[in-house]
Length: 430
Image (tube, rainbow, N blue to C red):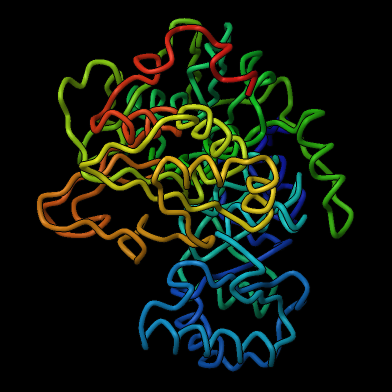
């Protein structure tokens, strides 16, 4: 049996007594398990159906009400009420609107997703936690209910694709551009039930917010997880927030990978993903007169502080195009409050944007920005499937915060350098 592990294998091996080589099926201990206001109600039902009476460890379980909050209708209010009552009964973690945020941004901020952890969530974008060196993956509500009860899951250990980024990244290229570029290369099924292990010199220099964006979208390539090797940046962030001890894991030098990909970031430019798949990638500056009706900056993908800082740098002293609306949703109250202190919120309001409470909002077609028939949105979210953000014949173009902000001003998909020129000083060192 091989002893050299990929990062995914190393984390799983530390949580199981079973074999943890790629392809093995094992039972693994869980460090943290959570659901949201959509996926928790069916998990609560299954929890009762299997006869469970208590959480395996209440402090390691949570419900984050983020999808339809503040509640948009009676059904969502009833969901939140059920979640609130169940969490209180089980003494698990629950935060009211006004005190939390979008789960995949909020939970790492709270020090509940940590390097070396095995984390499961009843939401496909749970893989965001991989930016911190955690094996974080999504699962269905039934499996989540069992994890709540037993503190264990069974899973098949995924094979791993190693992606090494080299070169010098342009300041106009964000983590969103890097992950869209990768998905464009390998396709939406290119990492199906595999782990992406992302590393290299260009990643060492990449801000943590951008790494979280990249890990978030591993699922858009079919990935089971998107993992970054813990470094000084990761460990400092985790140590300052951790609610419990953690032990980071690392890949072995002799680890075996299903595939290796090398990407030089030096020549990369801002990109978008055209409807209706995240792998329909094209340079933002080559989209012609692709008009938009709405721009959205936010979500668990790009609602963090650096995302809002970049958007504010574009929008400072400018106004939103008269023929569209711009919706900005910070991913958490930590982000919202810091953005207020730094003046970003005022910049958005002065530009004519709508700024709302932390929520998933329109990302999944929930609320706070649903698209009408025939409308097109330039969005920093993660999916652009048919009808994802509203009407079945609406369209979503995926982009990073710089492209989305530039589009909000120009009324069409555009490279931000069209507004700011090619001088990085325009970004103020962000």
